[in-house]
Length: 202
Image (cartoon, one colour):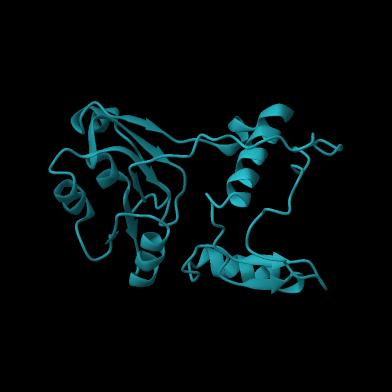
């Protein structure tokens, strides 16, 4: 797995989380670096959360018939995509998922939550919280995230007068109510053993 990051500090975090290498995309041609690392073959999948600054090069990092998943726009929204770009990049595929379409039903929502909480509780997912702020400083938390000042791209606002017991989600035994639902979710079942897999992450 190859990761692209915007700073040396984030590179250290990416490698500590399992990336084989971290590429500073502001300082290097990350497409060239990816091609060097893969012997010119390209990668199977790109998960791009940066958006405008990386998207078109992300497409060009793929192997023929590879998949690009755009799931964020930290550097700005992608203005346009010419379908011919997909063809010229190697007949690649592109998707821009929206969370709401993956939790359309109560069962889907509960299943996603069980997977997420299960991965956190068994150690496959480490929730990296950069700092915890009280609820009356929620505006500051949003400003930190929007300005991308957090090396972990995360800041949490805790409830007034309460402290988090830790960064994980292992104490959460039930999924929260789905949007519009007023009842608690079903009892937690054993988490899925299918890990999320990818070849390169932006």
